[in-house]
Each structure stands twice: as C-alpha cells, then as structure tokens.
Amino acid sequence: MAQATALNVEADKLAEDERKANQSVNRSARAKAILEDELFTAAVAEIERRILAEWRESPARDTEGRERLWEMLKLQERLVALLKEHIETGQIAAERLGQLAEQKRTLLDRLRRARAG
Image 1 (cartoon, rainbow, N blue to C red):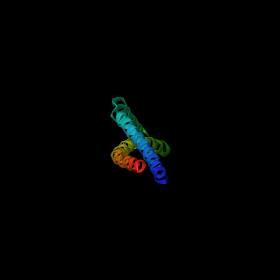
Image 2: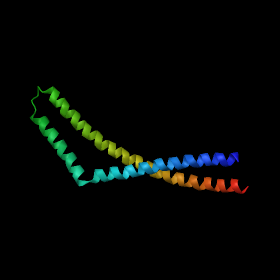
Image 3: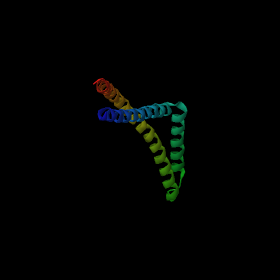
Image 4: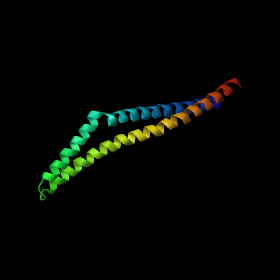
C-alpha cells in the first residue's frame, strides 16, 4: 500500500510538471505568433524609427530627453527579447514533455505491477 501511495505522489508530480510544460509550450506559441504578426513588427519598427528620429532632432544639451529616449528604445528591445525568451522556454518545455511522457509510461507500468502484486 505504501508503494502505491508513493507512486500516486509521483504521478501527481508528473501531472503538475506536464501541466507547467504545456503552459510554457502554449506561451511559446503565442509569443511566436506575436513576433511574427505583421502589425506588431511594423509597430516595433515604427516606434524605433520615431525614437531615433526624435533623438537625432534633439539638442545635444538635452541629456535628460536623450536619456528618456534611450530608455524607451531599451524597453522596446526588452519586450522583444522577453517574447523570444518565451519561445526558447517553450522549445525546452516541448522537449521536456517528451521526457515526461516516457516517465509517465514507466510509472503506469509500475502502478499496474504494484496493484497486481
């Protein structure tokens, strides 16, 4: 009975790991769709173009204004980097799902043997 309980705890952990991995894969697909969306890519390019144009037109003495523009540009880059990070995390999670499927099959075999014996 104790072995079956331990196996059930292990099964619960596998199910939670699988849920989290699926969540990462779904976020990855959404991030990829955003990054590939024509409107999003056009907006990112236009924002960058406007920031750089404003920076070029700003007086050299306006260090505070130029710093604000730099921060805006960096924030935009961080947004794109975060979406790319979600894609990479999802790819890792997809590989993990394959591992979890194998672990699940092994665990089911062990549960069947524990119940039979």
